[in-house]
Amino acid sequence: MAIPPFLAELRTLVGNRPLWLSAACVVVLDEEQRVLLGRRADTGRWALIGGIVDPGEQPADAAVRECFEETGVRVAPEQLTSVTVSPPVTYPNGHQTQYLELTFRCRVVGGEATVHDDESLDVAWFAQDELPDMDDYSRERLDLALGFTGRTAYAFSGLDTVLGSAATA
Image (tube, rainbow, N blue to C red; front, side):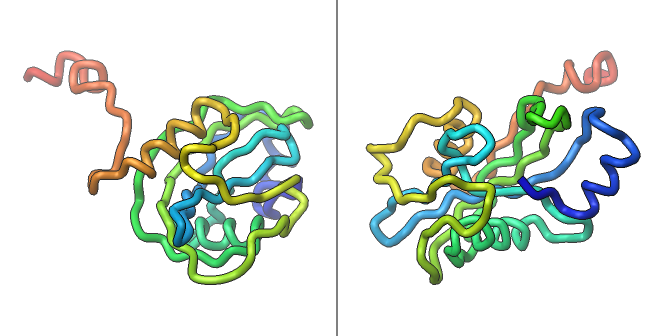
């Protein structure tokens, strides 16, 4: 899988040490309310479409770019549905990372769903009641986007956990 030039340069300095990166993901719905998913080349599993936000890039722009690069589908972001932190990831080449992921619900504005890069084995539309097996983390973000009520979802550990004794001061 190709990595952005800025990340390749950074990896020459830090090697395989864990990196904290931002990513933008999309939950794309078509006119029939089907969901667009990609089957990842690195794991073989179905997942949300998305990728790394380039330095200085707006997350919504990254979401639109990643969707087009991976699937050929042009989308318009409608809502930011969740802000989450991925589990730690170790890639086959030994690179370690963890992602701050911003997930956008998007609508289709053009294009045809096809494998558009080397990161995907397949792309397909799925009825919401016929979704393929996905890892729990991807499924959680998908469910948040599909059930979006107008409030962006995020995890919060609580004042006491974050601030300790300062929470009650």
